[in-house]
Every structure is written in structure tokens, then in C-alpha cells.
Amino acid sequence: MNTRARSPSVVRHFGRTAPLLLAVLLPAIRCSGAAAPDAAPPRPNILWITSEDNSPYLGCYGDPLAQTPNLDRLAAEGLRYRHAFANAPVCSSARTTLITGMYACSLGAHNHRSSVAIPAAFPLYPEPLRAAGYYCSNNSKTDYNVAGRGRVWDESSPKAHYRNRAPGQPFFAVFNFTSSHESQVAPKRDKTSFRVPPETIPLPPYHPDTPEIRRDWANYYDQMTVMDAQAGAILDELSREGLAGDTIVFYYSDHGGALPRGKRNLHDSGTRVPLIVRIPPKWAHVAPANPGAWVDDLVAFVDFPATVLSLCGVPVPANYEGRPFLGAAKAAPRDHVFLFRGRMDERYDTARAVRDREYRYVRNYSPHRPWGQHYTYPFEVQPSMRSWFAEYEAGRCNEAQAAYWRPKPGEELYRIAGDPFEIRNLAGDPAHAERLAVLRAALRANILATRDTGFIPEGMAAKLAGEGTLHAYAHSAAYPLERILDVADRASDRNPAHLPALTAALGDPHPVIRYWAATGCLILGDRAAPAKAGLEARLADEWADVRIVAAEALGYLGGAPAAAKVVTAALRGTGTYEALAAQNALEALWRAGHVTLAAAQEAVRGLPAGEPGNRIPQFLLDPQGGSAPREPKARGGRRQ
Image (cartoon, rainbow, N blue to C red; front, side):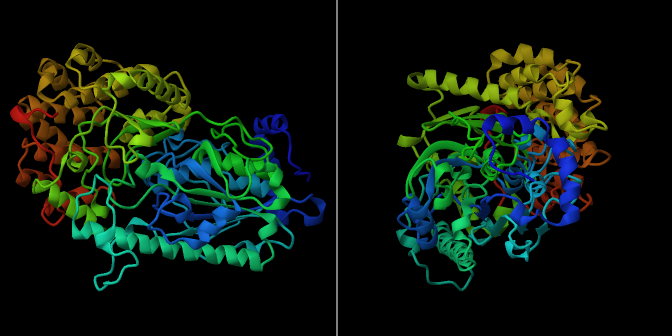
């Protein structure tokens, strides 16, 4: 089989017939075990070294506290990408974007640790590589939100290794390290010595100065050094095997940093990642710069699979949404990247963003929820998270630190160069109105172009998809995305002037539009009083997600008893995700003082076990043990 690098036009041609190509080639590859090595011209091996939950805390990225000699050396021999981003700030959504070559929200696979069917004709990137004769190994994390795809890798296990390939066979290999994961942030109880003394750590301005936060930061830098040594061992092994000159090496993290306000957040602290690419002299012609240089192109995870296929001379499937940034099919650089988040752990929070080289624009479609919702896992494993919240509850946080625990703005705009920690929101600054308008339009264009499924409540998704996939549904006339987006934009504006339009939308035939209309009333709080009758009508809506959000909105309008009844009923007798939405609403009703803790505890007692639906009940039954953050109540019960 001829796998010589093809011109971009040929790659695009084959991309349109990728499913047919796979159908023909995959059975042959699986039967033969490998392509005949001497029948194909030289092709590069590809090695991915991935770490978890870390921003660019590396010496080669200018971090003075880092001790990362192995990755620094790799950077000196390769290229550092200044603007590389995970499209989502949590592992499963980011990894789903990688494995599919598509934005997870295009497929309905954006919610953390979900299991979503995608079109059978859409290949996961190891499949075209294997069809082209590559041995593909993954050591060893998968964490994809994709259901029922069978065998994707030649081997995926803690023992998977490129050594297991046939003699002379090119390989694509992933080695993943968890040493920088959020579970490793907290030091062991008996740890007393840190490479960087905790008292000398310069804290980001959003973190209060507590011993627990300082110790977690100091320990995290030690864990980064551990990860660097693991990466160095893989690189040394590659050299000992005599393969360094034949292998293009990528190093990157699966999303941003592990400490609070990193992972799960759409800011740079949650989405910007280090990316180093070392290209051997044999393939120097594909390198955009000399070794040791910076590359300023914007790149994102959705681009990585297309880039690997381009480097390997393999056709890029037509459904892939990424742009190759290296190789024969290299595309023009992006002017911005598209970022998203949905449910993470047990908490719903819909947000979308675009980031260019200078600015980040975020649209929070759940501004009634704080960034710092009570995520059970980090509250359990990170003293820094518990300490930060304790400082907030005690009134010892300044505005930048307290903002994490308060309801969010509907829009955020940051100029990164002068505000790297994204503290000063410029969305309301007339001097930046023009840039705000440009990025707002870019975000809308991305949402519409990808047919973003993230505006569909998770509990509705399977029913709306029917016997097909959510991707197919989203690309049909049954999904009026432009109208939905109009309502969602009005809903998240917190502008009472939109209430007449929201009230009218409560009666729309489409359940997703009704959902966002009710959400807009919830966001307005007691200012939504004129919509009370329309919300009461929605308590009998045929869709549980609509009933739940309408009930929570009525809690602010004197309808707490009816709201509690509807939400409690939705905890049982509905699907997993409708019940989870009901748990979130019940907790919010308690926090706002509309439901007593005793009533909330009685409602969740005896619910079925199993994540993520057991986390909120466990927390409600023992809120002090969980160090519960409470949303502030404004005067008159208004949610600000």
C-alpha cells in the first residue's frame, strides 16, 4: 500500500471517502497484523507523551519555580507552542475531542463521563492510522465519552508499548502520566520537605494566602518534577531503541492545572496547555521553525488528530473538524480557538468561549451558578479547595478571591497580556466594545457551524435522538439551533427587558426553547414575576428538564411548595440525568432558603447509588462534612 505523503488536495479527496477506505482496509490490516515494512516508503513514527491536569508549569515556558530538565531539553530540541489549548477543561471531554477529531459538543459527548453513540461512519483516529499500517498503542488512559466502538487500538493497557509491533512497522504510541493529576495535589500527611518552600510560593491573585493552599502549590511543583522524570524515561528509552531519529514526539497536558480554578474552568488556567513538538532532521521540512523556537499559531486538541494523519500521509476523514498544523495537509493558522464546557462531575454549567492571541471571550449560559460549585471530588482530595472556601465563608476573601464562589457574569472579556490571571472583566468597558463584538460574533459562528448540541439538556438528549445519534438529530431541521441560541443569549443576559420574549418562549412547541426560556426566568429571580403564570403552566410540561427549571424559578416567586413537590417527584421515575438535574435544583432551592435542609435530606434519602447521581445526596445528608459552599442571597431574595 502506498502511504507516501499526499498533497493537501489529495488528502481532502480521500477525506470524503474515509469511511469507505476504512471499510476496505481495516479487515485486511486486522488479518495480516501489519503492513509489509519493506513495501512502504519511510514514514515517521509518532510518540505522544501526555500528562494530566497541568498548565505550562515548565522551565521552558518561563516558570521560575519549575524543575523540569527533561521537558526543557525536549523544548530545546523541538518547538514550543505558545497558544495551545484543550477545547474542554476536563479529561473525558478533552480526550473525546482528541479521539474523534471533532468537538465533543458537536457529537453530544461534551458532558463529563457520559456514554454517547456517534455515527458509525465516523472513524476514531487510531482506525485510519491502523488501516494505513501503523501499530497504535495506548498506555493506558482512555476516558472517552463514546459508546460501543469496540477495539480502537492494537493495544490499550498499562503494558501497551510500541515494542510489540511487527518488525519495521511504523508506530503511533501514547504514554500517559497521572503524577500531576488533581488527586496528587495534596502532600502526604507526613511530608515536611518541599523543593520550593511553601512560604515562598507566589500565589495567583484569586487564591487567598493560607498554609493549605501554599502546601498544595509546593507539592504540585514537586509532582511536576516527578512527571518530568517519567517523561524523560520515555525519551531515553526511545533513544536507546535507536528510534529518536525516526520519531516525531509530542508532549502536552490533557487540560489545564489541577489546583482550584484550573481544571473545570474555561480560563487559561483550565484550558491552556504546554505543547512541545520535536521533529527529527529527517522530517525537518515539515517544521515551521528551527529547533528551540516558539510557534505563535493557535492550536487546539481538535487539530491534533488531523495533524498526526497529515504527518503520516494518511487521509484526514471528511467529518474531522480540526485543522492540521503540520505535514502535507497543513492548513492556514486559526485566528481563534473554540472552547466549551458542560456537566462536570455532578454539576451542570453550560459555558462557551473563544480565545485569540490577545483576548478571551466567555459566554456563561449558567450565570446563576458560581464557578465554585461544590464538586465532591476536589473538595475531598484538595485541602486548598476546602481552605479557600473556608476563607470565603469567614469573609476573609477580597473581591478577586470571592468571585469564584459567587454567581458569574453573563459575559467575560479579558486581555491576556495585561491580565494573565483573567481577573479584570472588560465586557462592560466601552474601550473594548469593538473587540467584544468581534469575539461575540465569532463564538456564535462556531456554535452554529458545529451544530453545538450543548444547548440540549442532558436528560433530553437520548429521547430527541431516538434511534439515531444526537449528531444526526442536531444536523436535522428538528433542531432549530439559531432560535435556541437567541433564547439562550437572552436568558443569560440577566436583562429584564427580555422577559416578554422569554415569557412568550415558555409556550414554544420545542422543549429546548421552553427550557431556555424557563432558565432565563430563573436567572432573573424575583424580577421574573410577570412570567409566574407561564412558569406555573410549565410545571406540567411533558419534559422533566423543563418542569425542573421552571420549578426552581418559581421558588423565587413565592411558589416554593409547588416547586419542591415537582423537583422531589423528578428525583424518582425519570432518567438518570433528569434526576441529576433535579438534585442540582433541590440543592439550589435549599441554598436560597426556599426548602429546608431537613426537607432536602428527606427527598434524597434512599436514592439509588452510583456516580454522579449519588454525590449530591451524600453531600446533602452531610453538608458540614462536605464543607458546603453556599450561594449568597441578595436582599429581597434576588439572585444577582
